[in-house]
Length: 307
Image 1 (cartoon, one colour):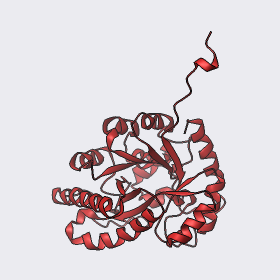
Image 2: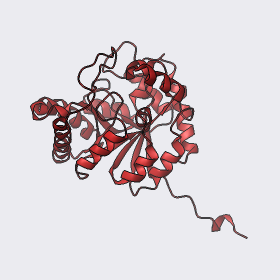
Image 3: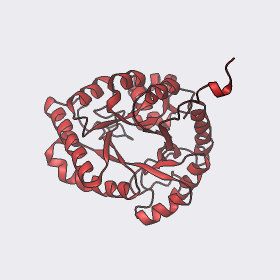
Image 4: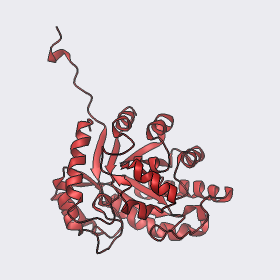
């Protein structure tokens, strides 16, 4: 008869779980509808997370010494910084892009993180829904996007030792399966990896497990979130911009939405890589007492998934 000594212990998880200001309804460096940064740090630690992202640059202190003191005394470490880029506009925007990115990269590196998440710019305004440019890139713009992203990945690695992970996002030119596969097929894996956001990818009709299975070597980082399928069907049918869709609750608390995170995490565990998986439940704007209980329940749920 087999004994407990005969039963192999489960393999330790290679996925490191964290959270982000986004899960506290933070989208902007300064907004009266957002909780103060001190409260975010207090509560993310209380909820059981050890890793955080920087969020919008300027929300958390930008002085590395002060930020290290504030995070360290709460038992927190930084996994990544985040930038928004419009690299499909080509070399003409490189200098202004790099000026913006380099400040965030410097803080990210100073905090000991190794990843920088890049989100493409929006084709329509996130609040008003005003169309800012054509929803579909021209072949020339696709060429700019891939070439300039590779350049950014190279510069970040050479100057700051950071790994660039590009984040497909609703209402940007890099969103659903066709966009993502085209982008990955056209970029150098040594310079560009993917931040797979399970919620945004589902929002745009993609299947995260299929993407991990097909492009596992390109997955460099994860954002964990779910969408409410009923709300999603409504906002897609109505053409609602992403910001108002979030205000209507399109992103929901796990495990109440889609995609199911258990198979996503299982597929990610099967990769020969250590990964960050950062919980990001978009909730801007939200009542200040809403995030903490959700964050704590989500951390407990993820522990039940083995991470």
